[in-house]
Length: 354
Image 1: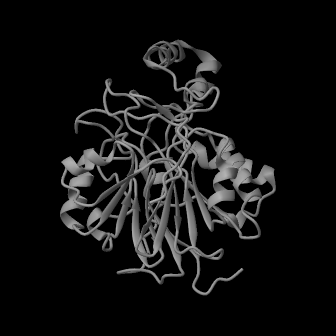
Image 2 (image 1 turned 90 degrees about the vertical axis):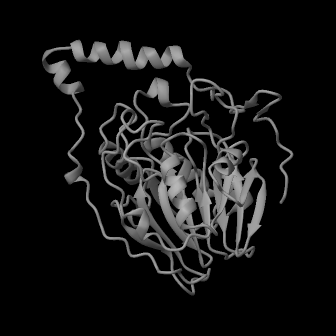
Image 3 (image 1 turned 45 degrees about the vertical axis):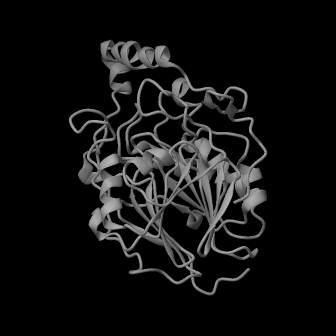
């Protein structure tokens, strides 16, 4: 493992922080201002103004679905496939290994089964349909990315899977029974069988209760199948606001075949901007990575939308805005993938060469 020397995101004795100007998340007082004051004011409006603000979510039946087509038990080593379960949960097949991202199959993103954000759209496929897992990557400890009932099911069904998590999250997994857990700091790199995995900077926060906020780290991931320039490679942004490191990630760790970038949970913007990108931010981040990615085509894979109602925008709005931003930037439509729940796409085919 290669250890990072950049510790600007560490707060000695207190956990972690976002090290960039203007990146501090809003506090509990601002949360109350949003959820109590602003939402109540919106409900009191009348007439045309209220109709304009009344942005409703479509029923789950209007979210298209597709049967998954991932390879079983594994894809070829030089192939990359991705299958969307929902929100930030993806099954990646890369380097001949099965990698699960931010596993959440529960009905709620919550510490209790009777309250908290409810899943609007069913998982793309049942947890029991997973192929044999080799590796599970966790970006941070929030309930919509790290779900205890799902983790316990995975630990029972995929006993040989290894787990990667940012600093401080590994002990939580070990207490639930995970046997092989590796914790990484930003820019740390580890080799696991055919894969080279690096934890990358992200702009977010952590905590599963009102206490202990930011005592554990949050991260993105670079996943590379081998060390050569042409090795299959995927970037996963994690849960993040816009930050200045995207081009540096591509320069240090690329080129990538695909970048998984979040596009949802952004409204109201004054509150969510430090911790969640909106679609325009995500397309801009893609542009920064694309410019540093060399000649390799880079597919944008949208995530963190259409599953849990976390913020005020309609659940079907992020793809509309993402497509508009993409078209406005003049990028190739074939390189934008906004998946259906359950859909599998081959992001790199066998025998691809530069």
